[in-house]
Structure formats: structure tokens, C-alpha cells
Image (tube, rainbow, N blue to C red; front, top):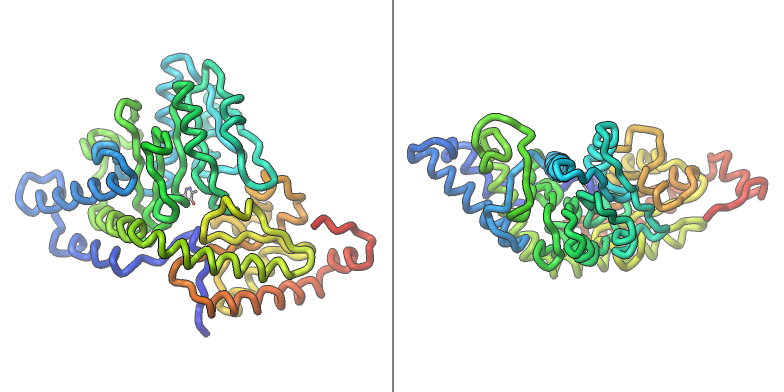
Length: 396
Ligand SMILES: *Cc1c(COP(=O)(O)O)cnc(C)c1O
């Protein structure tokens, strides 16, 4: 049976280009970039080249890129650093949204315990917030606004450029978790008014365990991993040269292919959305237009997302019911709840996240399997029986 992998928001396969770019640094070019001898300096050159390449894709200076172990670390460092530096000036208020990734939300929760105050802007039913709402929440003691570029579950693309402009005008540091955006939609830290931005290689066909933080010159950045002088004293530890070289190659490839990939993905995505919406009592989550080209997120009333996933898996289709972090727990996704979905509807969710490697045949197979499995599960569901009998009200 062929596997149809449509969980690319959780992680992607490495591209051939990225694997090719990383291979020399696993064996021949094994030097430590901090070493002064030739073997080390060759590795240092690779590190410099990767930094310059990534900076070019984001439209910033190479000295504004700090390599990390991934998106989570970049989020932690950016937010903690901005919080601590704000507190030094007596500013202990942070603005974010209710549907951020847990790397952001859990960092903020911890800061609240440490005496910071966080405003979580409510998300509209379409999975968006507005720059006006951010502006209205800014106070004289606001140190940081952190709002994601695109949501990892419902795929909505937030008005980051406008939010950045609001922050710039108010003199507030603006961080964005752009893990789902970079490599997928065009991101430009200058035009988008971004001060700090997190990326993760494995979301755009690079390797797991490597990412980067962009931090605009002039914005103070604190160190949280103590040790050597790597990353200009901001992040100790011998650099993951192989992973970093692969990340640079993957990002370059993703940016070069973006127009073609977008065109292909939007077509596949829209076929899926139109096809799945034919299932009675189904709903698309998140705005249909301001949406990542790869994302489909649906709810089907009267079923459990977990059951749907397992049956799809048995047919070779690998999807998700929410983020990789919430699967395995029985709580419905905090993102779907933030969009205002009732618990019982949020439980019946399905996220399909495509990559450019998916085909029309994949879409056909999914459009055959999902309605069959939904019908099968509804047939067994006591909740669905009540909905059909009219003793329980349809919510969607
Ligand atoms: C995957 C993801 C992260 C975490 O990145 P890792 O590299 O896996 O730590 C953070 N934010 C968002 C939006 C993500 O999708």
C-alpha cells in the first residue's frame, strides 16, 4: 500500500538538495568552526555561507541570524530576552494571541508566574486577529508583541506587516513565530516590520533539530545557553554545521520554487476543501482565502478525530487532528477552541497539510477515503444517532 503523507505541518521529508548539502559536513568536512586550523576554517566558511544565504532569503543582514536547535528554542529565546530587557525598563506587559504554538504559549505562561502580565488577544471565528486590536492592547508598559505569522493548525495567515507597523510606531518590540510561513509564503523582515522571527528547518524540507532566530540589530538579545562564544556569544555550543548547511539549501530551494509550489498547492488544497465540504455537517476551519497554500482543516460533526485518523492511517493516509503536540492527549485543540468551536465539534477535526510532493492521485484517494470513514464512524456513533433523531441539535 502506498503511503500518502499529508502531515507536512508536523514535519516534512528532507529534500534531495538538503541531504546533498549536508552530507559533506557529516564526514569529510568535520571540523569545528571554532578551530583555527584549516579543517575548522573550512567548516567556518560553510557556516558563514549558510548564514548569508538564510539572511538573503529573509532580507536581513547575516549578523542578524542566530542558529538554534529549532523553532521552539528560537521562540523561547526571543520572548524571554524581550521580556527580561523590557523589565529592565519597567515594562512587564506582553501581547500575544490565544492560538499561538505551545513553544510561545508555555513560555508566556511561565513568564506570568514570574510576574509578567500577558494579554492574549482573542481570535475571531475565521482564525484571524487585526492590527487594530493589537494597537488597542498596547500600553505604556508593553515590552513585546508576539503574534505568529501563520497558524500551524488552521493555516490562517495573520496581518503581520500591519501588526509590525503598529509596533514600530509604538516603539514596541515585535516577534513573530514564522515557522509555518518561511519557505512557504513570502516573508521579508524589512517590509514586514519584524524585529525578531523564529524559523525551523524541518518545516521546509530541512533536518530536524535546527532552526534560527532573526534578531534585528539594536534589539538586545540575551543568552540562555551558557558556554562558548558561538553565535556571537548569544548561543553556546558547537554549531550543527550539517543541519545548518541543509537548512540554508532547503530554504533557498523553497524560496526559488515558491511561485510554482504555491500554484500547485492552492489547486490541490481547493479541490480537497470543495470535496470535503460535500460531507454533510462539515466545516472548514480558518479563513478560506488568508490561508497557507498547504493547509486544509475541517471538522465533521458526530465523530472523534482520533478515530478518523486511525482509520485513515489503516488506508495509508497520514494526517493529523491538530498539532503534533496535542495529539495523544484527549483535550481538543486549543486552537480550535480559540476560534470558538464547541468542544464536541472541535473533537471531530482533521488537518491535512500538503507538500509539493503530493499529487492529484493523492487528493482523489483522500476524497474517497474521508467520506467513507466519516460515514462509517457516524454509523457507530451514539452522538450521531441523537443528531439524526433530533434529540440533539446540530451545531454545524
Ligand atoms: C513546528 C513549530 C514550532 C516548533 O519548531 P521545532 O523546530 O519543532 O521546535 C514552533 N512554532 C510553530 C508554528 C510550529 O509549527
